[in-house]
Length: 194
Image (cartoon, rainbow, N blue to C red; front, side, top):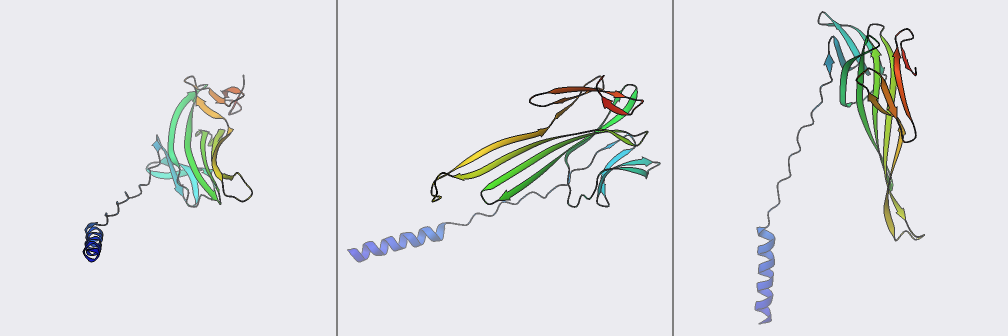
């Protein structure tokens, strides 16, 4: 009786192991490179290790304004180029997001930086720059000296200002404790308070 029971158990285990099939690995979608924006005669591009705005005349790049130097492996996310009028001058707003993840031991930092830069193309000059950094920190903290009990703590730290472009061409910078509104001065070619 014991032999029959043992034989049936081994048979069921063998049949169970044989009948289970390995699931096919899900195919990952191919990584797509986001197209960088074009507006009027301007093309945002990463070329020659530089993140830049190329000024195109008659179908060929005539000049370029460097936004960021030495950008090996740089892929801006949510890159946008918009034009607007401020004090009767046409300006261009370039915005993009950079995401960096740093992992060290029991700590992971995900740094998301949103950049906003305003250019006066006629003068080929940067007239304003702003960044907003959000640092999301996840850390495993041990509660005793023997490191047997732990908990995961999350923190969010912010630096810089939130950037808002107003319909009248003025800009607003907001933080937790202050708010600045600035207007464009076309003689000085810069933004400042009135």
